[in-house]
Image 1 (tube, one colour):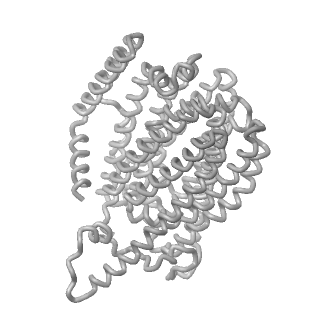
Image 2: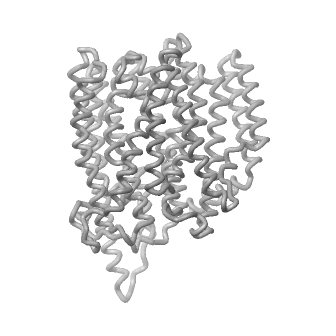
Image 3: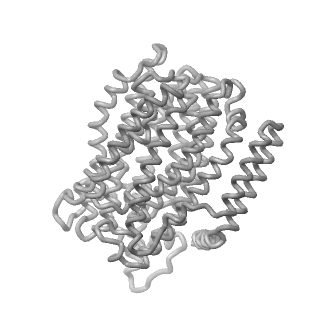
Length: 556
C-alpha cells in the first residue's frame, strides 16, 4: 500500500477543520434564530436532551468497534481478514438497536420532565433520534473502508451534505410553524441519516464499477493512458479488496481465514468498550448531570449550551479533527505490542516529531484562547445574543472559565489520543480502572461544585478531571520515549518570544476593555496578529515544514 498516511492525515485534518467551521457557523445561526424567535427552553430540549441521546447511542455503538478495527487493520493484517472487519463493523447496528430500548425508557421516564406543551413532540423526537442512529450505522462498514483507504474528500462532502439536509428541513418546518420546532428536529435527524446511508453506498456503487473497468483496462496488452480523475481515484489502490457492493454486507465477502469474527479483534473491542463508556461519561458528564438532576431549567441549560458551544469552538473546529487524524496516523505508524526500541527507528522518530509538533500547535492555540478570552468574552456574547442574553454576568463568567478548559482540552486530546493509539489491550484494561475513578470523581465534583459555584462548577470539575488525565498520559509518553533519548513533551513548553508576547497582549487588551467596542475589537485584532507573528518567528522551522506539506498536498 503506497498511500502516504501522514499526508492523508494532514489533508483529512485540514478538510475537517474547514467543514467544522462551516458547520458551526450554520449551527450558531440556527441557535440564534431559535433563541430569538422560538425560546431558550426549546433550544435546551433539542441541544442538551435530544443531542445527548444521539451522542450516547452512536458513541456506545460504534466508537470501540471502529477504534479496534483501525488498529487491527494496520497491525494484524495477517491475522484479521477484511471479511472479519466488515462483519465486525455490522455489529454496530444490533448493538445500537439493543441500546435504544433502555435509553428511550430512561429519556422518556427517568429524566427530568419537559413541560406538557412539549411532551408529545419530545416523545416523537426521542423515537426519531433513536431510529436515525440505527439507520446511520447501516453505513458504518462503508465509512470504515473510506477512512482506511483515505477517501478524505468523500467524508467531507457527505458530512456537508447531511448537515445541509438536516438544517434545510429543520428551518423549512420551523419557519412555517414555530411551535413544531422539536418535531422538526426529529424529522430532520431521520432525513440526515438516510442521506448518509444513500450517499455512502451510492459512492461505492459508482467507485467499484469504475474501478473494475479500470483494472480490466490495465490488464490489457495495450493499456490506454489513464485520465487524471482515474489516477486520482484508482492510483495506489491495488490492495482495495472489494469487487461488488454486496461485499459491504455481513457474511458476503469471501473469508480466507474461515472464521466469521476474529477473537483478537473481539478482545481489543471489549477493552475499548469499557474505556468508551467511561470516556462518554467524561465527555458529556455535565449534560448527564443536568438531565438526571434538575440543577438547571431547560432555559438555563440552553444558556449553558450556547456558551459551552462558543467556548468549545476551538475544540470542535481544530482540536477534534486534528485528534482524529493524529489517532489514525499513530495507529498506522506505531505498533501496540512491540517496544519502540524494536520498531523501525525512522518511523519512531517521525512519530515523536509529529507528536511534539502537534502538542506545540494545539497548546499554543489553547494559550491564545485563554489570553484573549478573558477580555473578549463579553463582546462576543453581546454580539451573539444581545443585551438580554448577557444580562446578569453568568454567560460572561462561563465563557471566561471555559477558555481555561480550552487549553486543557487541547493538550489532553493529543496526549490521550496518542496513548490510546499505542496502548496494548492489557494497558487499556489497566487504564479503564483509572478512567472509572475519573468518571465517578467528575460526576461527584460536578454535583458538589455546581451547588457551590452554580453552572461554572461544571467547568471547574471538567478542568480538574482533564488535568488528572493529562498527568497520566504525559507520564506514559515520557516513559515510552525516555529509553530512546526522545522527548516529544517539549512541545508543551512555549517559546519565550511567544509567551512574553501573549502576556503583554493580554494586559493591553484587559486595560482597554472599557473602551468603545470598535476600539476594543481593533486592539484585540492587532494584538492577535502580533502574537501569531511572534509564534511564527519562534517556530520558523515548523512553519516551513507546514508550508512544504501544504504545497505538496495542493499539488497532489
